[in-house]
Image (cartoon, rainbow over all chains, first blue to last red; front, side, top):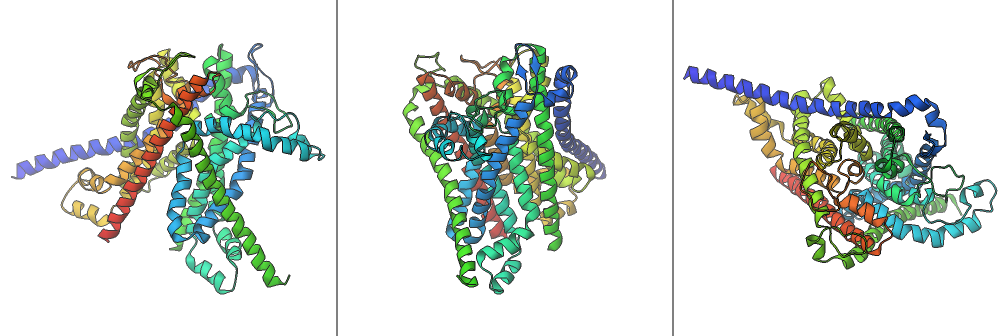
Length: 319
Length: 284
């Protein structure tokens, strides 16, 4: 009996070791993947970075014929489309989160919440094809002519809305991105608003504050870190979003002052040109673009995570 | 207007704005679904599921693309989800608060929101360049990398939800942690882990960017994993941007198929989770 038991125990110990190392290996693999992504991008980008040096980031030229490449127009497009998206999606997402947590009848809370989350599950290529065939014509026929006629003549800001209404371009890409990141921002903000202790809100109401005053003076200050975290998470998505943008951006490697003009973004340039790129320098320059995107989104997402985590810790310690 | 009326007025304005924002968000979803259905339904026919992608101007279907998507998604899940589940187990059961676990959790969250096109470039560099050609294996691997963070996250969360008493009871009976995990925790967290798998499938089955330069595309029927393989997202991308009406119609039909599949997956993931919560509530 004792012999069987000790054998059994020894066997169990071996299983334990095997299982433990299997889980540990899988966990370390996750670290290795991120490291591998960084290293492989560096390796692939090396020829282009060696050729152009730091000027790669500051030059607007992108000419496969003369083998001259610079990332500035792609960086510009990425940043501007994301900013447009955030300008639209942040207030709207805030409104949706506010509606869901403070105003919505309990019966509708779940269905609307699920609908918003389903919008987040729709793959980006669907937004792309929708943006190209539905949204772009509407913008071209109705919105852009109005902008050109009414905002265009205003000095200063008017420069942003000049030129012919192509339909596709930076502004349209920003619109599509806004719709894409909206559910992420709305869902994160809703979750953050839900963490505000009811006691605080009730105190506000007890003092005679209106719903909006409670939201603005109690809910928002209490969940500031979470709001910023949610916004940055949305920004991270917008910066790296590929297919939806590729459909509607117009793919022109140049910087135009007008938001109605076609442009390019880092991800859409890679998606469009990578399989057709001939020559090592061309491919390498596209991978260098990918490296830039990786660095930018990594910084944004890491900052967002840090903020959301701080909020989580605070929520835990306040219990 | 006195001060009280002004405050009420301001309240009304902002609450109305928030209602408008919600309606706008719902309108976007409705508009998207409406266009997909109205454009896609006309292209729906049995040919979609029996014929190959056609050359321009000819009749055809999407059979090879549907097969390719299903095959690569399945392969991606088969490779990615065990890694995600095991790593999630490590975080929930072995590592918990170790420095390594904190780092892995952080990295995993970064991977969860990292642009998928970057993952495509990564697989291109380490698989396609080494092998010298595009292949379905490379496509499946890039999908696997995207599936890992989703399954890891849900597995860890769900294992943490299992009541600590169950774990303690098992340990008190003399079971090693692996035995407790496999025989007690996994069954207890099963529906949660299944939810994670469904979400991961939903996430990767619509991915386009990483497949563009890993699996590429293939106009013909191919089951060879070592060769380029057709897949729905890339076919939609190619056909939608083409000038041919037939191709555009096929793209819409494909878009409808993909969206319906993903919405069904996401809704069933939610149903499984809701059932889990109902069960947990009853147990209390």
